[in-house]
Image (cartoon, rainbow, N blue to C red; front, top):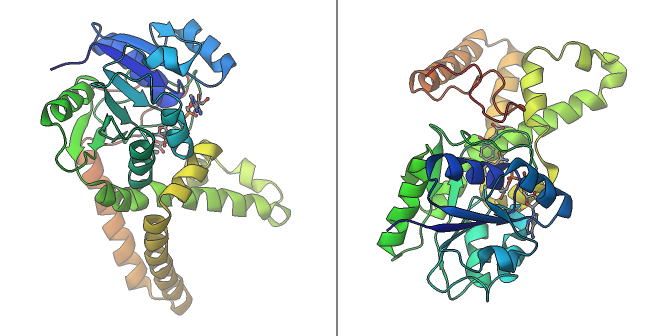
Length: 309
Ligand SMILES: NC(=O)c1ccc[n+]([C@@H]2O[C@H](COP(=O)([O-])OP(=O)(O)OC[C@H]3O[C@@H](n4cnc5c(N)ncnc54)[C@H](O)[C@@H]3O)[C@@H](O)[C@H]2O)c1
Ligand SMILES: O=C(O)C(=O)C[C@]1(C(=O)O)C=C[C@@H](O)C=C1
């Protein structure tokens, strides 16, 4: 089976990118969309993020055979509950939330009579809103699908094919495993970036604005991450609390070990650690997952500038 009518709820970075990607790679699918912000709906229509921007969510989902919720994790349940009676009974419901157990629970409770197969494209930028989306966001990125047990295999494979056609490499895992893995690969790095940028800013009396002056170095990379959407990231940390706290505990222990190595002058320990992490970075690049793309997601709406094929 393949989908014919997609409804996207939330027309920001993710929703907008899905809308544009579908128009480019799955042009036979008719797309409708809704965003809670009237200004964003107007902008989404201007940019043509979907074929039809609707004034209500009910209108957007009414004829859909695939509905994807692209709203912050904390409002997934409310956004779904608002359209419970309007989503056709045989439609597949999915989402793009960055945490999976809490979002799956919220969607399941809001839509007890619908089939929900959650997903998470591990692809994004620090930008948000209807101007942030671009069609190639998912190209060569992972999309993790976390189906419930005993799910409809036909619909699952249609969803996998959908994401693959948008350019993603799909991986299937449990929501629990997803949340643990993403806690360390995505959520913790964001927490660290938010922390270091905040700390540096708090220290401005000491550094006399040198934070800004010298931020062309490694610090600049942290400021990009720390510019990510506050609403979304508040919700990610609250909705993946247990896994994040587990990983934070481990991280703190490792940081303390490095702190000790510096204090006692254990150069070997520091060198070994840094050599290991350098090798990790190089293996990521060898696997073709390097993301140091010039202009990646920074307003070119294409994301391809500077990309070598
Ligand atoms: N930003 C990333 O890098 C990234 C990557 C992968 C997944 N995600 C996930 O995707 C989802 C959306 O994130 P985004 O980056 O597109 O955020 P975004 O802020 O760009 O877009 C979210 C949109 O949802 C709208 N919205 C909020 N509440 C709504 C409601 N009740 N009904 C309809 N629209 C509503 C907002 O107005 C906004 O336009 C989140 O769950 C996030 O965890 C984000
Ligand atoms: O590149 C970025 O700006 C991102 O933060 C993208 C990123 C990530 O951590 O990798 C952020 C959140 C997601 O849910 C998925 C992707």
